[in-house]
Each structure stands twice: as structure tokens, then as C-alpha cells.
Amino acid sequence: TVQAFSEIPGLWRNGLANLYSFWKLDGFRNIHRVMVHNFNTFGPIYREKIGYYNSVNIIKPEDAAILFKAEGHYPKRLTVEAWTSYRDYRSRKYGVLLKNGEDWRSNRVVLNREVISPKVLGNFVPLLDEVGQDFVARVHKKIERSGQDKWTTDLSQELFKYALESVGSVLYGERLGLMLDYINPEAQHFIDCISLMFKTTSPMLYIPPAMLRRVGAKIWRDHVEAWDGIFNQADRCIQNIYRTMRQDTNTHRKYPGVLASLLMLDKLSIEDIKASVTELMAGGVDTTSITLLWTLYELARHPDLQEELRAEVAVARQSTQGDMLQMLKMIPLVKGALKETLRLHPVAVSLQRYITEDIVIQNYHIPCGTLVQLGLYAMGRDPDVFPRPEKYLPSRWLRTENQYFRSLGFGFGPRQCLGRRIAETEMQLFLIHMLENFRVDKQRQVEVHSTFQLILLPEKPILLTLKPL
Ligand code: HEM
Ligand code: 2DC
Image (cartoon, rainbow, N blue to C red; front, side, top):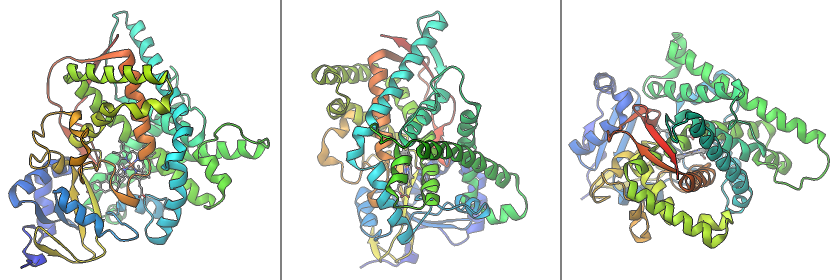
């Protein structure tokens, strides 16, 4: 017989007391490890309430399948109240990230066609490929200047610029100039604002932003300042395109970018377009750059694997004579490496949905309307789900039969990551160019752990050495 909802193990009766213990454990920065600990303590399902944040947590792929079957027509994830509060405070529209219900769906359908449908890949690849080539040229220059035939550095700032340049070129159909020596200080400010925005968001998952705003808390003020910086820079980029579009009357031969395509399509209001394009621009920086940094870190730790990937890329290059769109279809191991990176170092610690019907998971009844959370980080390290989980093995993704609800780094279904195609293409092209030009090396074999700043980040700088082949 099915057991009652109230029988699910876990700590959910006293939210405030749990918030206190969470804080004592430094849980704000360790939510991923706290989740692993909870699954070890309570088993594959547990209930939890921290502050006002109430959820049921699951870890098994089979249970993820049940969850996503119950997500309904308008899938809804946890609302990040800090983000909606800011928009309400400044009277700005929600984009697709924060909308829900029919409003979300109608916007998302239009955006899907311009951002994530396979037909746009042909438009994106030449733009992103150019950015990849410029990155490589920039690294060659750095190596030359070092006078040592190698360059040892914390690549994260360079990768932030690469990611912003990439997403910018796709959104606006033109270059922002971030691969140059002297970059626009406003673009650098934008990058800094995104990191600050993420960092100030995490405590507000547990402490209501409305309350922090009332007492004039620093964290709320910093958060507002960060979003203001993000919106100002996105507004400048959007205005710029809007202006040139109105002057430019001749028909476009080249692909004009996502923003211009959306404006010409005329299916969404300008305010809706601005809101979602801003989210795309902000969502496109830390996510892909950190995933690439983790991938280079893993390749540096696994030199033989690095050579294998290099060989795969070389064969793909040879047999397609550099036709990039074709080449991207011939690099399964490179794609496996990216999946493997997201398994061990996911950007999102969890995926969540408010379920729209009653379900049964692990023999417990869960009522309609409950927030159910899949612990993505914990699942990636569960030995029952991934044999020898501590091993970085891209080849585990080559067999498709074992992938059932296991490759969820970008989420699932109609509410999955809107930037997924951009992210995947941008990261694949980056690895192709890097593998063709440099060997990645690491000084000492020290393990780097993650820290939670809304997204998971390396807890300390990762120093890598790049040498020309
Ligand atoms: C949503 C992961 C890159 C824009 C999401 C979600 C995840 C995710 C897990 C939630 C999906 C769900 O609830 O099912 C990632 C990862 C990335 C990445 C791992 C890179 C490695 C990007 C990029 C952009 C972007 C490059 C923008 C160009 C968005 C947006 C949403 C989203 C707008 C909200 C979609 C909606 O609510 O309809 N992402 N993301 N992401 N992501 Fe990404
Ligand atoms: C954070 O407990 C942990 O892709 C919380 O590009 C639950 C939660 C809810 C929503 C998740 C968030 C977590 C992590 C960051 C995500 C976000 C949805 C979208 C966002 C996964 C797991 C992200 C990084 C977007 C951000 C776009 C934004 C900057 C405009």
C-alpha cells in the first residue's frame, strides 16, 4: 500500500529551526553537499523546509521520469523571488525565464523557433566559429608575449568574455569586440554585474527579498545594483540594433541575429522581446564559461583522454574538409565530455517542478501542487545511477541505451534551457579549436570542489597551462 505524504522522511516541521541549522552548516554555499548528505541519511526521497522554502527531493532517474510526466502543460519551476522582486520594484516586464502559464507558453513558442530549433544552427555556427577562432588567436598572442612558449593562467575572465562575445554575436548578429586587448569597460561591468547578481541571489532563496528590502539590507541593494547594470547594458545593445534596423532599409542578405529576427517577425511586443533578450544575454555568460573551465580542468587531469578527443577532432576535420556543420556531427566523444562535465559539475544543483497531478514516488503519495526537486548534483554522483561516479569517462555517454533520464544538465521538456543550442554549439566549437591548437596542462593534481552561488562554481581559482601543439 502507498504511504502518506506526511510519512516521507526529512526535516520539514520547523522551517525556521532548519534555516538556523542550515546557516550553521554554511549550507548557503554548500547546498549541493547538504543534498548529498540528506540522501545518504534519509534515502532516495526526503521532505525539507528551510525558511519558507518547502520541497520534496528525489534522486533516481526513474523518479525523474514520473516527475516530468506530471509537469503539465505549463511547467513551472521554483520562482526565484529575488529576480521577480527586482522586476516588480523597477516595473520591468518578466521574460520567458520568469513568466508562467499561457503568457510563458505563447512567448516561449515564438522564441523556440528563433533560438533553439535545429533550423537556426546553420545561422549560429559561422558566427560562433569566428569567435572560437579569435579566442585561439588571442591565446597564441598571450603565449608569444609570455616568452616561455606557454601560458599559465586562471582562464575564467577570458572565458567570461568568450561566452559573452558568443551569445552577443548570436543575439545581435554583430561582434561586441571582447576578444580584443582593450575592451569596452561597460561590457566588463556587465560581466561583473552578472556574477554579483548570482552571488546575491542565493541567500534570498531562503530569506524573503521583500523583507530584506523593507529593512534596507545590503544584499538587496547589491542585488538591485547588479540587475540595474545588467539591464542598462542590454538596453544599450538592444537600442543600438533597433536604431540601425530603422536606418537600414535595404533587404538583409546576411543573418541579422536573434533580436532583429524577433523584431521583424512582429509576433511579440517590443517590451516582451527586450525582457527575454536581456535574460538570454545574462544567462549566456557564467553558465557556458564555467562548464568550459571545468572541462579544460578535467582534460588537463586526463592527458590520454585529451589525446583521444584531439584524434576524434582531427578525423572529423579531415573527412569534412572543415565544413563545421558537418564536423559537429562527427564528434561524439567531445559531446560526451561536455555531458560528463555537467554530470560532475552541473550548473544547476537541482531541477524543480510544481506537479499538476497526484503522483506516487518511492511508494509515497505526493499531492498535486507540491514542489518536487530532482537533485541533479547528487544524482550525478550516485553510484547506483553512474557506476564509478568519481571517474571522468566521456565514453559512458556513447551508448544511448543507458541514458534514460540521466542527461539532464539543461533540464527537461518544454521548459528546458532556452539557450541550450547556443550553449552546446558554442562549447563544442570552443573545444574543437582549443584541441586543435593547444595542449592543456595542470600544475599539481589537487581536487577542486564546487561552491554554490546560485549556480555551482569552482571554490578556488583553477590554474591551467596552455602550450602550442
Ligand atoms: C533555463 C542550464 C546556458 C538561458 C535553464 C535550466 C537549466 C539550465 C537547468 C532550467 C531548465 C528546466 O527547468 O528544465 C544551463 C546550462 C547551460 C546553460 C547547464 C550551459 C552549460 C544557457 C545559455 C542561455 C541560457 C547560454 C542563454 C543564451 C536560459 C533561459 C532559461 C534557462 C532563458 C529559462 C527557460 C524557460 O524558463 O523557459 N538553463 N543553461 N542558458 N536557461 Fe540555461
Ligand atoms: C538554484 O534551489 C537552486 O540557467 C535553487 O541561465 C533552485 C533553482 C531554481 C532555478 C535555477 C537555479 C536553481 C539555478 C540557475 C538556473 C535557475 C533557472 C535558470 C538559471 C538554472 C537550481 C540559469 C543559470 C539561467 C539564468 C538566466 C538569468 C541570469 C537571466
